[in-house]
Length: 148
Image (cartoon, rainbow, N blue to C red; front, side, top):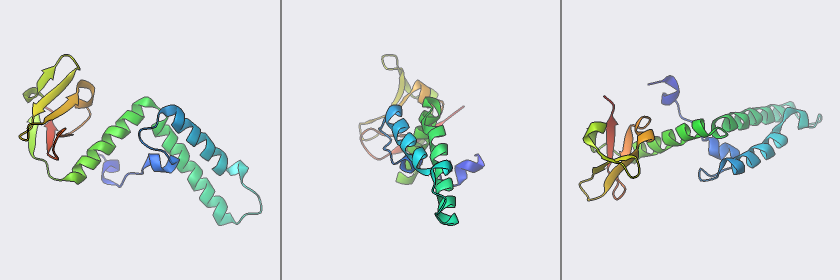
């Protein structure tokens, strides 16, 4: 596990005042608005030094948030990690399964496994390489996906 995974993560969406369902264009608008608001060159010279420092820190955070959320690949990775963190907080893992134990669905290019409640654990081929936890689509049970 990387050191960054052990530390509490910043919520890049809240830093931009955005919702995870917003598209990159909406995120860009929020980013641009905040960058203009907190940019060091836009600050008045007669404000206290502490305020200038706060604006600079906010500007840096907004820029970091955009570096993650403004790129489809890093945004997808971040969203998957957020989802996995949420699942970890939901409760214990019900079972551990290998990808090979799951059924392949050619129609939507995903793997699935029946849950004891009658629901399914589903993961796309792309996500299967990146996620470790999968939630049932019906109940609150979670399985851990083991990578061989």
